[in-house]
Length: 406
Image (cartoon, rainbow, N blue to C red; front, top):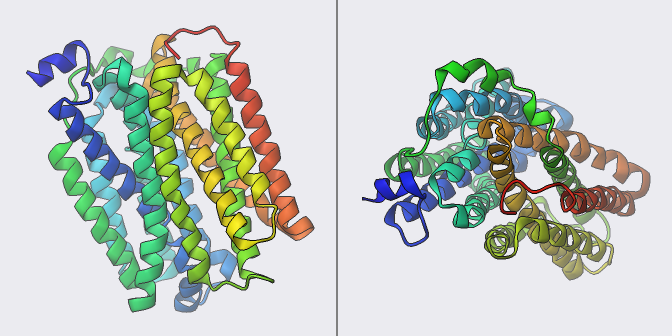
């Protein structure tokens, strides 16, 4: 009965299949982003274990994000032909498998290779999740369901860092990597058991060439603005957290790595911000919610300029809530806009996420230069400028002709 309803209108909150879908995608997002960032708190231990430099140890993160970014360009368009559900299931399972193997990596280069493969395997989930939600969830609940998925990614980003850091204190980096992989196994089981099969997806092999190589995703001004929002917002977000590590470990705070890492607990507010923004977008429209989220991020950055530690943490919390509100709504907006424009939703989602990880790599990396030149004032200036660009793009979206309810 519920599959019949899904074929006609999509699942609604209260439907058993909607609840299963929400739990499965929350678990999938949690596992994927916990595993993606799990080596970040382990970098000092990797330096000692493999006798590499601190800059080389960071490759354990960048190899995964680089592999993810590249694979996104293929995974989304391929899903237009191959389907959504199986790709997501196998993505979470393969990601977890490579994480387990990483715990036993005998050499540094083996670990990097496994992290790169892990990033490639991860792409099947984020590239497809939003397109799957657009097809299987009722239009009136798209933003809410997208917000719940992004909430899972926020919790995962926090949990990966916190759990890995704690486990490494107990048994070293291999124990921590294996522990995070165990979390991934549990989440993968949830995804395989609960994720409903696609009801509204229809593969069309005759459209293979157009779906895989179409340039239409680069011609719609609204989609281009959304890609820009992805790159600038996450670039500012990563820059702030990269700079915060230097600030909190230095004078006058002198926090240990473990204590400084607790700041990632504010990711919980990101989860709440994403889910709340999704609900508000369903009620008031995406065009109204995204600019407000941008203003919240700017307010958070401004608060971090204060010296007292509680205000710094407050500023990070406010910025995190605003960022995930923007990202949660914008990422759900992409497939809706693409569908209305006659563009492959999987490919559009892939381009959004490719922009997301490109912005993270480029602008997040510039935080070190900003810190060297002007310490926290330089980092805040970089982040503030990027968030201003995000806000301008969000405002410009108000003037783009609407093709969907947004």
